[in-house]
Amino acid sequence: MNHKRIYYSCCTMLAYFICERYYGKHHYVWCTPYFDASSRMSQNNCVPTTSNPREIYWSLRKEVEAGDLHSTKVFSTRRNIQGGADAKLSAGLISAATHREILDVVLRAQLHEFKPLLLVIPGLPVCRLLRPVPVSERAAVLSEEFLIENLPRKLFDAIEL
Amino acid sequence: MNWRTLLESVPRMAATEAVGYCMSALSQVGVPAMSKTDYFFPMFRSMPTPEAVELAKKILSKIEEAEGKEIEDLDTKMANRYICELGTANDELIERVEGLSRERGAELIRRLHSEQ
Image (tube, rainbow over the protein chains, first blue to last red):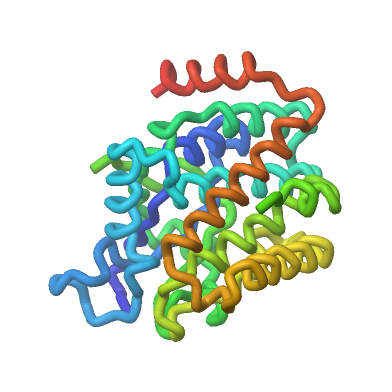
């Protein structure tokens, strides 16, 4: 268990923009307490590569910079944003007009809009917002992975490496 | 494979949700068994909807049928190809949502860059 109480996450510029503009600067974040879980400088941990923020950041960045039009991460991100907008519309959290705008933006977004952003989240202010990811959902049973469904912008830093 | 007919068999939002589950399943190809996760994980409290789960299972079984092997036995390249196909089919479906505007989308993207 990591007790330093800093959490890291990776998102795309597009997802960040959508949250800032349409979701009241509240972000949906999947995070771990390690930037690079596989580094020898990190404490022993069970966070696998697929959930390692550093790995996620650089693999996405490479795909975007290579102009990979068939990037599966881009397809998945696009679908996740669309699905998120659908869920918020169904829950009555956004209007139909806002929903249409989000779909418009996502459909027109070019590859470079999917550039990654690293989120650095101090633990103390978000301790009540952190929800452990259910074991069935973690990439490894003992992996430390958390979900914050509505993280206010003022509680984290967003960085381009 | 023609995914459009299959996706059109349910309401658009259920189709998009189902595509998400399929992408999640396909992206776990090649991942060690102990690191695989439940791909029907509800990203939001309102999910998963039964319609979407049923459609996702149907899509995945079509892929298995076409390839003659189970999803987890596909190679990564093949799984990625299906992720792209499904993503493209889902985008085509969304393009037809009433009230969408290419011009507005392009303008909002321009604004995104000017605000950064």
